Amino acid sequence: MSAAAARGPLLLLRMVAYEFRKRIQFRAGFVVREVLNGTVEPLVMLFVYTALYGSAASLAEGAAEGEEVALGGWTYREIIQYVAGLVVVRKLVFHNRALDLAPEIFEGRVTKYLVMPFRFFVLLQGRFLQFTLMQLAVATLAWCIGFALAPEVWLVPVSAAATLQAVTLVLMGSYCCFLVFFILNAMAFWLDVIWSLLVMAWFVIGFTGGALVPVSQMPEGMYEVLSYGFPYWMITAPIELLMGRLGAGDFLHGAALVGGQLLALDLLRRWVWRRGLARYVGAGM
Amino acid sequence: MSASPPQGSGVGFLARLRWGLGVERQYVRIGFVRKSQFRVEFVNQVLMDLCFYASFILTFDILYGLGGEGRLNLGGWSHEEMRVYLGMVFVADGLFMTFLGQQWHFGQDLKNGNLDSIRVRPGSTAFLYFFQRFSPEGLTNLLFGMAWLAFALVGVVPGQTDGLTLLWALPCAVAVIAWSQVFLMLSYNVVEFWLLNSDVGHLVSMLLSNFGERPLEVYPSAIGRLLKFVLPVAGMAWYPASLVLGRLDAGFALAYPLLLVGFAVVVLRIFRRGLRRYESAMG
Image (cartoon, rainbow over all chains, first blue to last red; front, side):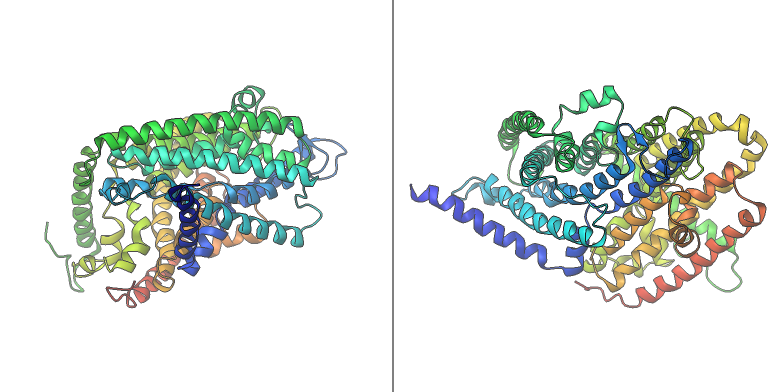
């Protein structure tokens, strides 16, 4: 192995350590941004679903309140498990605020990275890895707290294999998000402001992934379309794998779909970056 | 317009209001000048909020559609009523985005000491700081929100309320939304004086806004009471929608705005107290 090739992984590790240090600097901010991230919407949706299933139960004669009534193929108990799964899974999804490439481009600070003897992208991959490791710990903690508080209703994975499959899909999808946000940040080579694109992408990814309503509970036509996208395989499908609603065959199908999209996004990322650098003048935009 | 606000005990409310409106007119002018330079960004921000509105509309269309159209309700709110509720949420969001966008920078500005230039200006620091970023794209989305509200009201007017009621209830509802948005926003941000640039203000804002975007009847009664009487998020959409739809009894409808005034007085006092902690270079 050449010395330059050996430097890559070492640099990556150093970047991860550096990113950890930066994140832990502001303790209150750390709790808010890293620990409580992604918990509010599921909590609110839990109340909405409770009211909805209550209404459905009152319409269904003889059914116990909130139970056994299925809406769109989901019982109330399953929906609670889904919401619990959302709290955990969404923590693992790469968040757009974790990437601040656009200001670097806009203010002409990318130059200093371009003269260094390594690929600039490895620095950002370090950010992704730091985010993932941190959020894996936070998600595990969130799952443990939820299980300790409400073991009867909390989402317990059906098997270790299902957990592994679900985590694989979430992380593949999260890397797709990372690539999408990189590409949108790189739009700063052409646009003055890109934060609205990032927020828009976040809305679209969240909704089409099932952050508000499980994709498999949506109308058939929507489900058919959305089940081709990586957001579905990043949010709804992994939770369904953990619940046992999907199996190993679905996992392979999803992994192939997300893998294809990941490669396509990476090619797009390389192309956009090259095109952007071609117009970059190093003195801010 | 005079550079300084009218001073002295003899100066009336109207004179102060006129001065405030003059300042706001200048902010509007600057907002249009700034945003006309960023046309793509203008379109993007309008699209961004439309995505937000569409995700809400679709979510509730899907949820109500699960039981067959017209059968399910959410805490007693039918699908038609929920559309009106969402209209109020969009109007509240539009008002917020149009006038109060600067609040996203409050923690950082506090940390960097950027309030100096605001504090030396004559006039209320809170008003001059939080209203300085007028957003034409927010105004565009406010118009979309109002259009949705009008569409939603057409769906319920024949059965539930009438045009005459709407004539007085709708302006009252919008006024309550504006008042609530301003003082709720201020209450979220005062936390930053004590927990500098921690994002706690943003978290509280996100948490309570999310709760307020759904009818209070879906929550356990303790949370509902908290959102009505302690942190009156109900003023954002629940009270205005209930007022317009005739879901409130007259006593409550009249008393609730007084509670909102009381809340505003308390928040302003806390804000002034927090402002005394400001030391220019807090970071």
